[in-house]
Length: 378
Image 1 (cartoon, helix red, strand yellow):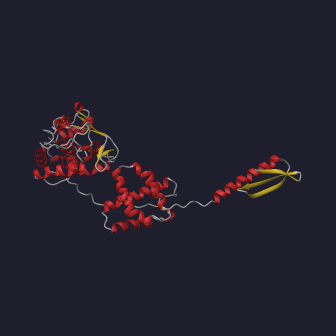
Image 2 (cartoon, one colour):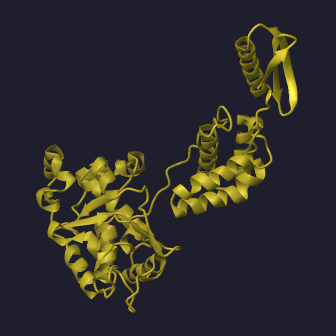
Image 3 (cartoon, rainbow, N blue to C red):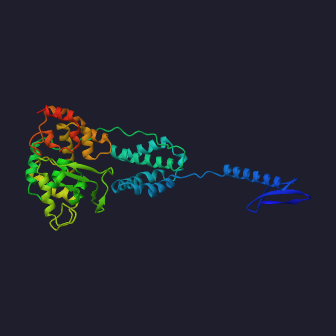
């Protein structure tokens, strides 16, 4: 602040960085000079901020922030897929563009480009959802006013999943797997709908035999060889059927495992790798049983399909499978129409007795109406 007496009056000057921006003389008192100085300084500051050029971000600025801030918060498998789409598709197309120059037409043109490269429609939708997420984050971070992403996902036909549609195939497989080291692992997927990583990641402490209950709260990651959160990052409880031999098979597997935590181990006592269990041991049983060839994950589909045929409760199935959104579970909904002609899961329980099939603490028992309607089928 520069205020001083000048020719019997007071004079005020406004300086910024050794440069005088304004001055005025003739004030009767120092307070008047000071007041003028402060008002003028504030006006100069406001005008300077208005005239300061707004930083223009490029897509690379946004992408760098996305990779540093958001990617570490998602699961490793999803992160790996995102990085593949970013490195091989998104980065090369948008990297040097100013964010305010990216238009909805440009984004739709990008989608057409990756479709012409031969990418499957589902993979195209996944890539575009990633791009939508990147732009949405840019909007949240204030890098531009409004996301230019306006596209809707491509409509694709529901892909048919593999499952054993007859109980004879299921029975043949289980009979062949009866003496296999990983018999209980197959049954967990087939009767409780567990994912492969959840089966391998199951620890001895997660099974509560007295309550017929299994706590699913993590999975074993194949590539990282460590625990990770379940898909959807949700824990859940699944229940053992009292009439099934799964409880005994699990107890036997726990007793035989020398590992302090893992249930399903190799002959050397090491935790079995998910890929080895699914691609080798499981496929050998399928081949010897002479049943239609399916993947290990299709055991989960088989469970879900038969659950809808015999029980028909989409919300209970959503809870058992650990789906975040019921829309994911809807792929099995059409099978509920087959309930009038469906057989009971005789390979799991002796008969379709709902009171015995589900223990009292199971969520299915909360719906008496559904129990009675299923009982009428018998």
